[in-house]
Image 1 (spheres, rainbow, N blue to C red):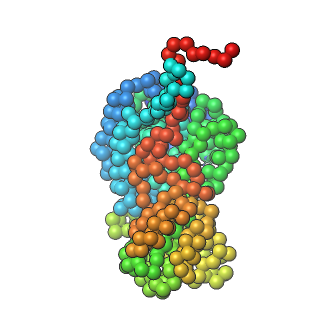
Image 2: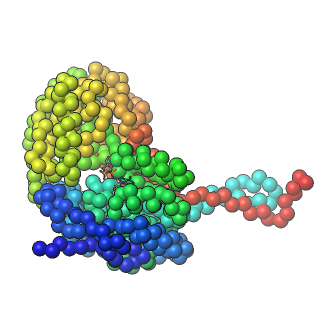
Image 3: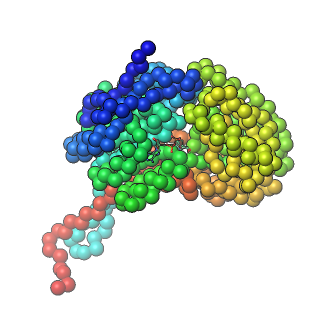
Length: 482
Ligand code: NAD
């Protein structure tokens, strides 16, 4: 059977790869190739940047009402085909059934929030520093923005970049993950159907280095917005520095969920299980370290392991499945290696620890120490370590004892400690009496330390994606000193 071939989207048109390159799109649950995707060559990247550059002038001048209407129409286009997009995300990403509709709904909301931001970029006015002077700041769009997106929530995370960039008056070149190119191309399709002018958005799947290096090096591209691993983000930050390019980095996490001794243990177990097993742990905010105060450690671990054993693993299309396939076959080997290292150094596998093909069994480790790679290194799978803390200060120390700093959570009814934790936790987002996984399109989302810098969502995105300009207006003549 011949496979469908999907072209790329440049200047409002669908076209094959300039040099004919194609790559396979693989269903991670079955390992089957279900589509072939046009791969951008250097010339295609040049065309995408040139068309975004040419479209910038008219797009930034468009009335706010027209940009708003376009974003809202795009949300409606998605809503009308929500089930089809859900099924695509399941097929291409291995997303479980319960996550895919959430992702589609988030994208719709994101567009609506972005529409609400179109009229919001405000400036300031300043008291005069010279007689007759009026001082003000305005916010202007940057121009062409390059977006590099990860695989794990491919429709949502790329949409979050595109929607706010366009709302602020920028144009865009998107490089989706090589693992989920169709979810990225779907974004072009829905904007196209809503009537987006040519060139405002270009989507070019292709080899990371070919596309990424050109986006970074081209002076017409004013900013790179990246979501992905800390390893790739660090490389991009260095390159962005070389080219004096603005960059925001949403990167990996090793997120602590802290359970204090007064917590409701059953509730904490539920929060921890959702935090690590949702989307098979392939979430930047996953609760990959669970830190429990000593007096309730044994009771928590027993109940948590019992719950982990009940988690359903398998076909992502089945609504009862909680843990589906990992997207990269190599990830199972990587995690198995982390577990072997931990066991060799004295850790205990309380449950799981094995995989069948791409399906990794929910895994809980105890006795993990800082000498083991899994203590600090992101696993990006359904595996977590439960660490014992002597007291509150030790729990806080352990939670901050990581190079990452994306999200953290504390479960307690002690108000003083909850707020103290929120203030002293070294992470961009802190959730009290909740899990570490939380994301809303109007909230400033982002991390500190190796989890990156810059914020995404609502007006935080608009601020990252606009330039502040100070303008003075001299009424009458100013007296100069000479
Ligand atoms: P990845 O870093 O492997 O890839 C991300 C993107 O970068 C892909 O599009 C990839 O093709 C591209 N890329 C890779 N090498 C490149 C290069 N040299 N130049 C330019 N682009 C390059 O990440 P992934 O495996 O797709 O996603 C998982 C990672 O993303 C995890 O670490 C996860 O924590 C992180 N993540 C972070 C957030 C957040 O908001 N902080 C959200 C989702 C995922």
